[in-house]
Length: 131
Image 1 (cartoon, rainbow, N blue to C red):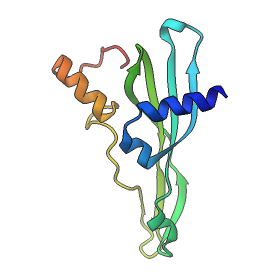
Image 2: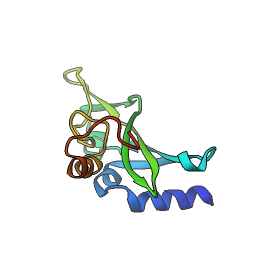
Image 3: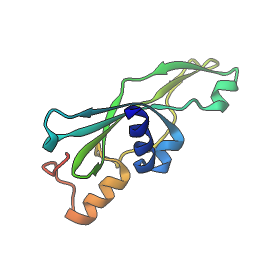
């Protein structure tokens, strides 16, 4: 029951772009220290039906997950663990990943969170809370 509630909460706070392209797989909370509590949302890239239905492309599974820091919730750190799908073009033998821009260039922050930090602090220093 608690997991279902966390998934509903995550779907309310995640950017629409993320929800359209990724499925929530699991949510973990670190509750050892309530002041330092964090939430990690594990997301897997959804299957692209155009590639899935095509005879030309083959799914090679998922790449290793990458961590992206998103907006904190009530002063608690939120980390998105994104697993991207890798595809292979059977005709050329090339493997590729769909182009999805989730993070701000040069950071591990979500675009929205990076824009907020830049507007608030000017540049995005690495010593900010939740960094």
